[in-house]
Image (cartoon, rainbow, N blue to C red; front, top):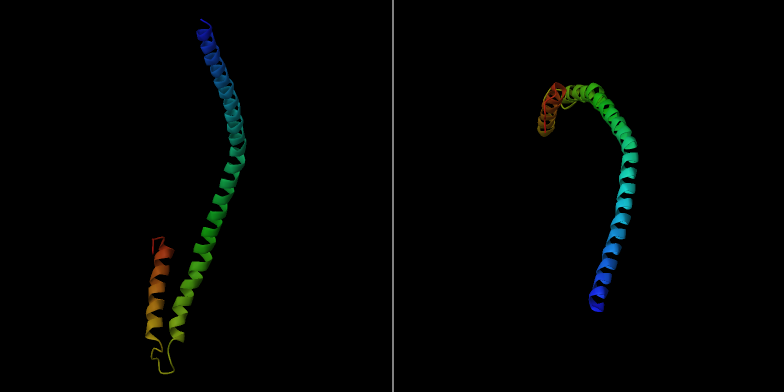
Length: 113
């Protein structure tokens, strides 16, 4: 009978320890959830700011840099000719034509990669 009581007591002690550990872990989990909820708002604000910056840079790129590059690719082939109008570097001319085609696609909003 004493042995059964000792065994029950041991089992009860283990169960109580398990329950206290579970309660502690639940409190830690609640704390972590609260921290995540508190951090959610600043993260959303940062995401909105990053989206705004991204749109600004995209507009800068498409409205300023791409047209400027397009104008340069139209001007550069004239610099690649000698006094008599012959091409100085054929490979450079081909590269410029390819670049100009890619820029035109980019200006139209197509994927050029």
